Length: 349
Figure 1: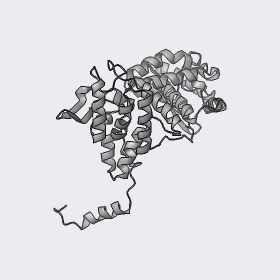
Figure 2: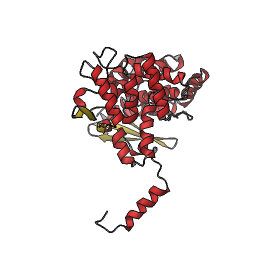
Figure 3: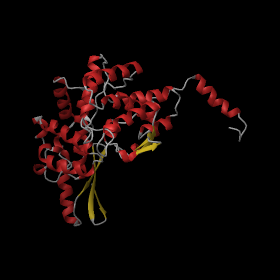
Figure 4: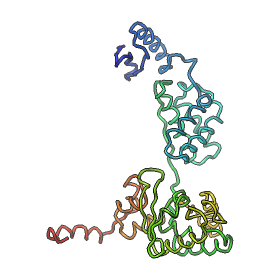
């Protein structure tokens, strides 16, 4: 064992079973540090390394209030904080996990939790959301020096990715049904607008009239000023169809927002168009289609038309070009045209 003084605090570096363990001893007194290091060695062999007082280690249930405050402070989006809170609620609903001391949560216990969720026929993506939150909780505990290490948490495979792409015929059919079922709703205008701009529904619902650029009274582009990441901030030019449908929505609006509720007096809530899309999708037997499919439709069409990945990334507001590259499939003609550029004399491109 080795005591290491960093600044004014001693740390212990212990080799056990071929692995180094590092622990702050929270004191600058060498004599006290030596005693605490001896205690850690005892706990290490008992499988309780990472705590100075195993009886005082917290549980998931006991950390709930602090975790909520932490996520409210550090999550960039309120929706992200709410996601973690809802998943923590699920974790706390499982007694053997929520009441377990944090330092005793290991791979065996996590596997037991996974099997319980799969037995209840919970979707793979939902279980992965639970596991992701559990990982956040344990890393929080690690940062607060409540535990010494975080067990490896493996996500489940087999997540069904929603990549449904709408055709023009399907879009037209949905618009016709929407006009019949909800004649006073802006959904009939919102659907084609989303397909031609690739906006996330939250971005569309938050779009204000002040963020729309007009030429001769018609909208020509929109500016997204905030989103799920810094990359979401962007300007999106409008197609003719998108411009006409946005103009139709603006005639209904009686507030600062472009997309509004039935009476036009307040912003459209993201949940309503999602419900409408789901209902229309069932009627048209569009299996696997969700409102977010409008975004996949936008990206897929740009990729099919030969848009470069970085251009698609900028228009869609992707945070990583690798996401955009999934939609780009250059054919042989595009490859030949690219090589032909090398035959062009320099300065004449």
